[in-house]
Image 1 (cartoon, helix red, strand yellow):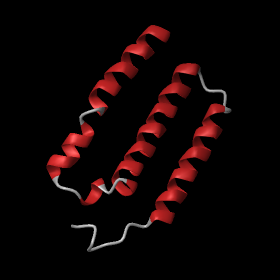
Image 2: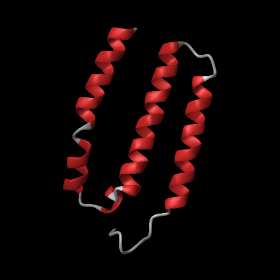
Image 3: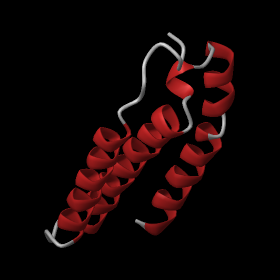
Image 4: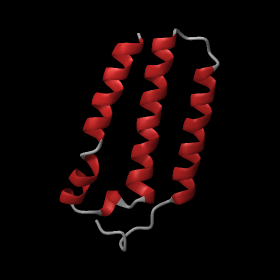
Length: 89
């Protein structure tokens, strides 16, 4: 579906991003084990990045090839996160 066919609901996405940020702040102060806190925060950050990419960068309405091109940087980022987590803990 093209962007002309439907208007994205920016305020709804903004509300979702604000809610995820509030959850991140709450998780940071909940007192979980450090490894658990880091994993939860990384998961929430990835979720927020996907929301921004899909709606504010309009990837939801783009071709499959452009979506794949935009997703390629996530692989090296995931590898770097895993390596850093393995060193720190």
